[in-house]
Image (cartoon, rainbow over all chains, first blue to last red):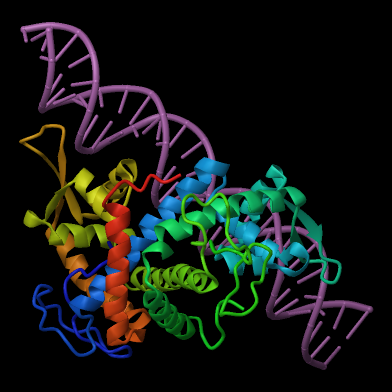
Length: 184
Length: 184
DNA sequence: GGCACCTAGTTGCACCAACAACTACTATCG
DNA sequence: CGATAGTAGTTGTTGGTGCAACTAGGTGCC
């Protein structure tokens, strides 16, 4: 999935897209192209993401009727000072659009896990605040989630895998998200 | 983002969830909780996925008006013998549900990239077959996509990163897709 | 102080994906 | 051969997600 569709027709980041003659099965491509080894990593990366996230979602939903997106919101609020976050900041954290977060928070308010609170300093703003019920839900869910992360993901990683991946992924994040790291 | 309250970057664990010695609910593996280092890898994994896939989707859609899911289907068909695949096999490949794939193929048939073909051996079955237009679309798109994979992902990986990640991710896949992962 | 411009959040709308029910076909067993 | 169970694919329905438009409030500039 989302793997190679053939080869690469040359081209540098700023240059023109090149010709379309190539053979994906010839490993002779080199230079700035994506090598087969690199493509294997990319494909496995996608597949692992799909499989592991799918498993975590299923477990969390089965055990607690809790969608993974809800869990993300609960974690973000739990970690925030005062257990509250402006909608926009929360949206950035959980990688949602504003509108998507509005609806998501609507549902979580209905469920009693979150409350909205008017921001006094900036009357445009709204805080999403974790309720006791939300915190309790998170406590109960975190065990399930962490167990899943361990069983489906980190359990298979040796110590040097962890180190190597932390470094490599950190390098990608640093480059892709700009000078400031995405987490702080 | 689907992480947990554990600390990031080896600093203090930001939330009340992290500093737990071990969770008694964790079955049969005392002390084998998720360490902060492991949690960092998991969170970065998720973040990299979101950022890189988002960038690739945007580039492909901007340049070719081609959703990433369409590209995945084109790639799968291109790689298949006879440039055709049974719906079910295709669904497994692109990690879609049966119904989702039916609708997706509907759209791609409308676009002229794919054709349906009755399976003679098993009259229940249907093949999705790549059309010349689909192959042409894929050729044009693959350059953009591969460039994106290189620029946003593999470019940041050293040679031993590639080796380490291929091994580690392969181990996860083998474990998660081999036996039934029905933990819970 | 008033107007243009910006930001925060919500809502209308369209699209997309999954679940479950359904049709069509195949395989198994008596 | 006919009944039952199982498989392949499609369709009805439902829920979630993003873009663009909209409202409300803030900021800068004169």
